[in-house]
Length: 81
Image (tube, rainbow, N blue to C red; front, top):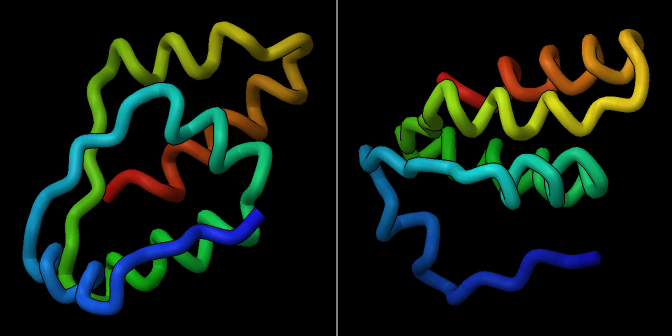
């Protein structure tokens, strides 16, 4: 998977806040390398990534076991500023 963005995409979000929903966390958990690069590029522009507690709850509820729950929780916390 490759995330395709317009040439000035990251500049547009300079010093902005982006609210992430559950689907972003699900996709990024399944494709951590691609989304990791994407999130890092945003953060280098001073972009702040935020979410809601209800999104975290929804993302974590799909964990099939305690270990996966822990992985998803740590993953969520790494993304959010």
